[in-house]
Figure 1 (cartoon, rainbow, N blue to C red):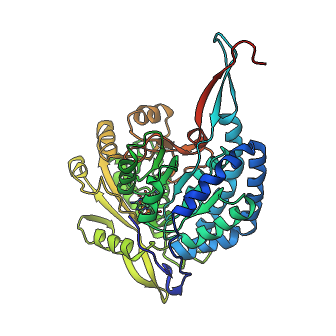
Figure 2 (tube, rainbow, N blue to C red):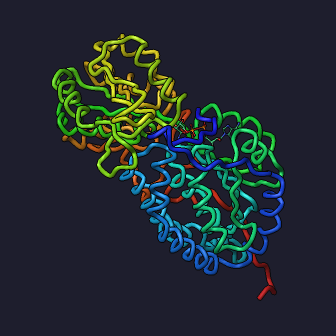
Figure 3 (cartoon, rainbow, N blue to C red):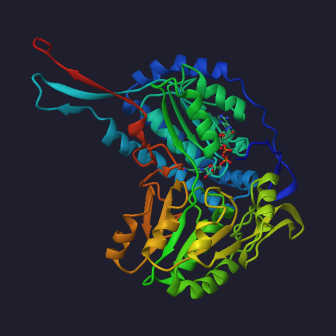
Length: 463
Ligand code: NAD
């Protein structure tokens, strides 16, 4: 989706950024392979101690990293700080998960004493997207390291500078080769994925790239592949739901990170009895998100990430439709040249029109929300499931029974009641159905996908 290197800040194109060069792949894989056994043999406690030193080092530079994310990706500073908070919180959560999932389990009931062990695999490759350039990769890097694997992190070319500073802290505290960053794009990413010595891949990004990786490594069936991809997430408002709260959540869900989140609320499905009033409320709530310099604390709507993304949004705004809020892609804001935007909302006033919406299978990845009218439960469910994605959904209702009734029909990996679709805390697993993932949820509990199980039994005379 986003591939080109860019060397100026999306919030101020006059501001030049450090140039990062692509790295050599082969030496990184060789070093990760050589370092693996030593790291695995250190034992869990020692590995966790080393990672606690990394956590302290990252904490010291967290403000610098947050500003780096704002500068490089156009994500507002307050959101970027939130991302760093999630990066740091992930250390303790991963250590807890290790206790739960990596302990040896006594296997009872067999003819001999037995247990199930968890074996580290070797080098793992973590490929990250631009929109959470540290948090999402970090969520796969830590479990792999704790489980005794070595890690090569291939960040997005947009996010490469902040990834470099993040990686320096790991390199300072871990033995050589245990954690490395390989800078680059598609070529470096694919070379890493297809190397036989790499035993696991965790990819977060677009469906097209995820599919290309899956096809390329399909023959190596023992290579563990975890894919986290896109979404076309819907907020559903039932007849008994709080429409004001729903409109607020929808506006937040499409304006956070300027609509560039996998869990962005790119769709709202509204019961007919609430439709007109919801639309009015949504218009008002979207008005609260005004563009601004991503590096300022007061900014609530950052920029799009790149010229290509900005152009894609401009094209979408010109593509016709019934606009509730027209939106804009602007070349500057307050004298700063950049990829500035205003949010947009488009309405589909009948079930038939909604089902024919040509945008159900594509992420626009910009602050554009499509609002659909539904007359009854069947229409709500059909509209919801009319996309091939299945990442997050939220149902606004005051009735738990209605939540269960509708929720059980929605094809989605993360289901919320009366919350924004973007409210996905690190304390829970996070993974998508359909085109959104391949059944290995990241975030909480991801550590269970970072090792191989081995069944061991002790026959007579082994004491
Ligand atoms: P992208 O697919 O363009 O790039 C993701 C990463 O893949 C980058 O590091 C890129 O350099 C690398 N890459 C590109 N081509 C490759 C190839 N042929 N082989 C190996 N690696 C390759 O995605 P993006 O634009 O950076 O991020 C946006 C996408 O990520 C959206 O689709 C979004 O929904 C998705 N996303 C998903 C989640 C989730 O958890 N489900 C989270 C965030 C973003």
